[in-house]
Amino acid sequence: MKFKQPQTLGQIAELLNIEFVGEKSFPITGINEIHVVEIGDIVFVDHPKYYDKALNSAATTVLINKKVDCPKGKSLLISDDPFRDFNKITKYFNPFIASKSSIAESAIIGQNTIIQPNVFIGDNVVIGEDCLIHPNVTIYSNTVIGNNVTIHANTVLGADAFYYKNRPEGFDKLLSGGRVVLEDNVDLGASCTIDKGVTGDTTIGKGTKIDNQVHVGHDTAIGEKCLIASQTGIAGCVIIEDEVTIWGQVGTNSGITIGKGAVILGQTGVTKSVSGGKSYFGTPISESREKLKELAEIKQFLKEQKKK
Image (cartoon, rainbow, N blue to C red):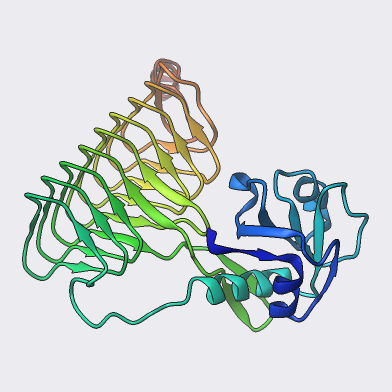
C-alpha cells in the first residue's frame, strides 16, 4: 500500500508515538508485507525467527519489537507491538469510509459497460469498457477491473483478508489496505469471493475464466488464460502461473506456486509447490499417473488379501 504523499521516519514515529533509529527525514513511501516489499516500504516483524528476513528484505524501514543493529541505508521503528502499529498505519492512511450510494460518485465506469440492478460499486473503483456486471455483485473500494470482463450474480470482490493474530483475549485482525485487480477478458462465475491484498494486490490475469463458488485468498496472483472450476479454494499468497487448469473442489496451502500449464485434477489438495506442464492428483499431491498407479496397486493388494 503506497501513501498518497511520501512521509518521513519522524512523521510515522510521531503517529505511532514510538522510538526510531535513523534520520528523522528518512523517506517512507508505503507499507507492505515481506513477500511484496519494495524500497521505501515499511515491513513489520514481531518474532526473532523472522528478524533477519525482514532486516535484509527490500524494505527500507523495519517496524520491529526489539532494538537491533540497523542495516546501512535503512531505518527502524521500535514498537512493543508491531502488529498493532502496522494496523494503526493502515487505518490512518486508508480509513474505512461508509458509502452513501450504491454506485460511488468517484467510481469510473467505461463505455458500453452494463451494470445490472442491485450492484454495489465502492469508492475509486475503476471498471473498463464492454463489461457485464450481473445483479447483486459487490465491488469494494479501490478495485480495478479491465475491459470485456463478465462477473456473475452475488460475486464479491475486495472483502478483507483472513489474517489474524492469536492473542490471549482473542483473535486480532490485521487490517486490509490492498486491492483486487482483474485484467482484460476475465470471467467470474456466480458467488465467487476474491479477497483484497493485505497491503498489495490480489490479481487475476488476462483471459482467465473462473467457475461458480470459487474463493481466492489475499495477495494471490493468478496468471493469464487459467481455468478454475467450481468449489475450488485458493489460499492467500499463492502464485498460479499462466495456463493452469484447476478442476473442481481443489484446495491449496498458502504461499505455494503452481507452475505454468499444470493441470490439477478434482478434489486434489495442493499441499506444496508443483512444477508446470504436468498433471497432478490426490492428497498429498503427486503426479496423477503415479497416484493412479498407487491406487491401482492398493486395490490389487486388497483384492489378493481378500482371497486369502
